[in-house]
Amino acid sequence: MNILFLCNYMLEDVMTERHNRNTFAQSANNKINQIVSALTSNDHQVTLLSSGLVNNRSGRFYKRFKSRECGHLHYASIIDLPILNTVSSLLSMVALVASIRKTMKVDYIIFWNYKPEVAVAAYLCKKLFGIKIIVDYEDGYFSLNQLGFKSKIFNLAEKLVSRHVDGAILISKSLISRIHNKPYMILNGLTNKKVMDYSYHGVKSEKITLMYAGGLDYERGIDVLLEALKYTKQEFTLYITGQGPLADTLSGDCDPRVEYLGYLEYEETIRRMHEADILINPQRETIAFANASFPSKIFDYLATGNLIISSNVADMKAFAKQAFYIYENDNPQQLSACIDQSIRDIQHNSNDDKLTRIRQLKQEFLPENVGMKISATLLN
Image (tube, rainbow, N blue to C red; front, side, top):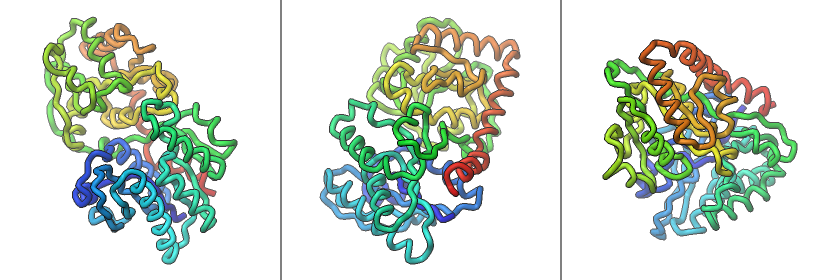
């Protein structure tokens, strides 16, 4: 099958040319890479069409181009002004699809979330060219009221397009009700092979090390993690990397066991994750967004084979099958108890069962195994 993937994928070439980093999301790139790997490992051909959106309000016109870093990636043209950037990217996407159809048959379009620049473009391609379309529904933007006007636009795009999709890849069971009885598969994520294949030759520190890598905001629960430290007396170093509005809480009177590394390049983050003994996901469970998403960092963490502590966000307890230390209701004292227990298990060499279960989960979600399920369920 020849598949076009409409998304917001970005590499250094477009960020440099369009003077932009404010719309770059490493987690989105990771997930897109993994889905592409899942499809190509099952003999599908995938071409990425990126919206290439920036939000600099420069008024400049940026012409579409083929990536110099990735042979199967094309960036759409845009006019860098609010609203116009979305409309211009959308129209350029449709033009790109029309151009590609002159050189090969396009069997399916997969589009990333209900962002209008990709969702509406996919809808128009179905109407104009008769191409089947599949939504990769990663984030339920309907649950993010803080997005304001943007949330309304995303919801409008979903209402327009959702009844016309031919299938869906869903991040969560809670999204099933939104796809109008179309074929679907639940895909929380894929084992990150880039992290798994990283060649780590270092020696772990004698001191227990914990790590959190991700956004520093309310939704990701960084404040819950910091509060939990008040209830544990264990000796360890907690490395935190990332950026966000709560980054300031990591300075001043922060717990001395915390070492904030700031924003790291992805390769350095991977190295640090492999070095850690325990990886933590404190993403909030008790907010609406928790059931309309799934933390992609879990699949980075899985790929290292290290111990994992997580909130019960998106019914993580059922997903983990006893592989993780799980705390519930965003309770910092429960999180502290998980930290204590995981450290004791390391000290007493009693963590073999969890490590075995982590290896099993890692294998289950390898891209080639996921690709077989996508092919059987949606591409027929």
